[in-house]
Image 1: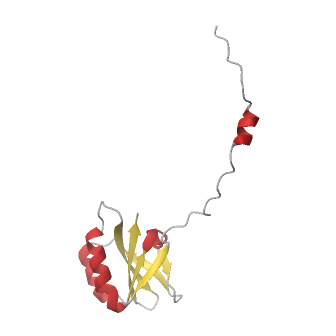
Image 2: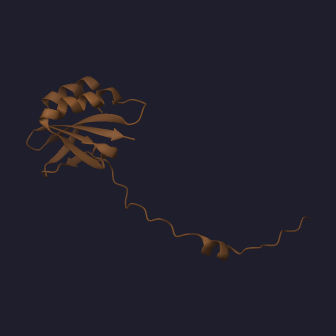
Image 3: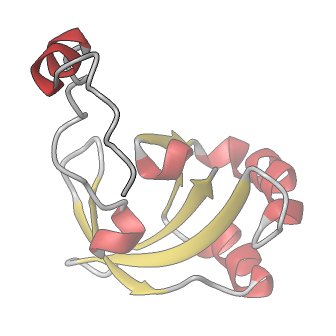
Length: 125
């Protein structure tokens, strides 16, 4: 029967040598698309109606939706797109909707209690 090797370092010594764990960023927070609701900078609450949307439907909503928001960093930063910049923002995003490359985008349609429509485009990294 083989003999056990003698321990050169105790478990307590190894444990003491470890650095403290970095605190996590807090509880896991779902993106607006995952949570099903979004509160914009004006305090309006939006509920998800459907999504991810087809590119053609998203393109229609670029022109038809009352508000367009891009959720950069998987919804960590919400960027409201002014009406005059919607076309330019869409041009930079449309080819990356549902793509395998990064960043990729997924469009969602949200609706407010008063019936206004929101096009929310979430960036995934």
